[in-house]
Image 1 (cartoon, rainbow, N blue to C red):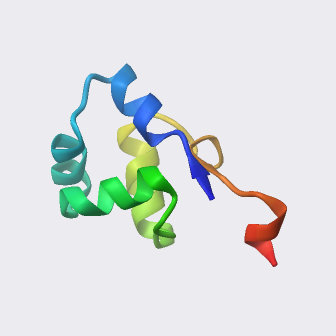
Image 2: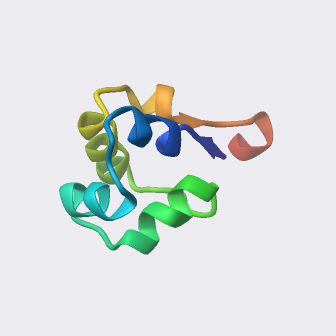
Length: 68
Protein backbone atom coordinates (compact mmCIF):
# COMPACT_ATOMS: atom_id res chain seq x y z
CA UNK A 1 0.00 0.00 0.00
CA UNK A 2 1.21 3.47 -0.84
CA UNK A 3 0.15 6.60 0.98
CA UNK A 4 0.14 10.34 0.37
CA UNK A 5 0.43 11.17 4.08
CA UNK A 6 3.86 12.78 3.83
CA UNK A 7 2.78 14.96 0.89
CA UNK A 8 -0.45 16.04 2.59
CA UNK A 9 1.30 16.62 5.94
CA UNK A 10 3.65 19.02 4.17
CA UNK A 11 0.70 20.87 2.64
CA UNK A 12 -0.64 21.53 6.15
CA UNK A 13 2.86 22.14 7.56
CA UNK A 14 2.49 19.30 10.09
CA UNK A 15 5.33 17.26 11.51
CA UNK A 16 4.95 13.53 12.07
CA UNK A 17 4.75 14.23 15.79
CA UNK A 18 1.99 16.83 15.38
CA UNK A 19 -0.10 14.53 13.17
CA UNK A 20 0.43 11.67 15.59
CA UNK A 21 -0.82 13.78 18.51
CA UNK A 22 -3.87 14.91 16.55
CA UNK A 23 -4.92 11.34 15.72
CA UNK A 24 -3.87 9.84 19.05
CA UNK A 25 -1.01 7.55 18.04
CA UNK A 26 2.77 7.47 18.46
CA UNK A 27 5.02 9.16 15.92
CA UNK A 28 6.37 5.75 14.93
CA UNK A 29 2.89 4.77 13.74
CA UNK A 30 2.90 7.73 11.35
CA UNK A 31 6.37 6.70 10.13
CA UNK A 32 5.11 3.17 9.39
CA UNK A 33 1.96 4.53 7.71
CA UNK A 34 4.02 6.82 5.48
CA UNK A 35 6.26 3.92 4.45
CA UNK A 36 3.26 1.72 3.73
CA UNK A 37 4.46 -0.77 6.35
CA UNK A 38 1.31 -0.58 8.45
CA UNK A 39 -2.31 -1.08 7.47
CA UNK A 40 -4.38 1.24 9.64
CA UNK A 41 -7.72 0.42 11.16
CA UNK A 42 -10.67 2.08 9.49
CA UNK A 43 -10.99 4.37 12.50
CA UNK A 44 -7.34 5.50 12.27
CA UNK A 45 -7.57 5.95 8.49
CA UNK A 46 -10.69 8.11 8.96
CA UNK A 47 -8.98 10.25 11.62
CA UNK A 48 -5.94 10.81 9.39
CA UNK A 49 -8.20 11.68 6.45
CA UNK A 50 -10.19 14.16 8.53
CA UNK A 51 -7.07 15.91 9.86
CA UNK A 52 -5.59 16.10 6.34
CA UNK A 53 -8.89 17.30 4.87
CA UNK A 54 -9.00 14.39 2.42
CA UNK A 55 -10.78 11.11 1.86
CA UNK A 56 -9.38 7.74 2.82
CA UNK A 57 -9.17 6.86 -0.88
CA UNK A 58 -7.09 9.97 -1.61
CA UNK A 59 -4.58 9.11 1.12
CA UNK A 60 -4.27 5.34 1.04
CA UNK A 61 -3.56 3.99 -2.43
CA UNK A 62 -4.09 0.26 -2.77
CA UNK A 63 -2.54 -1.85 -5.49
CA UNK A 64 -4.35 -4.89 -6.85
CA UNK A 65 -1.94 -7.20 -5.01
CA UNK A 66 -2.89 -5.50 -1.70
CA UNK A 67 -6.50 -6.57 -2.16
CA UNK A 68 -5.84 -10.30 -2.66
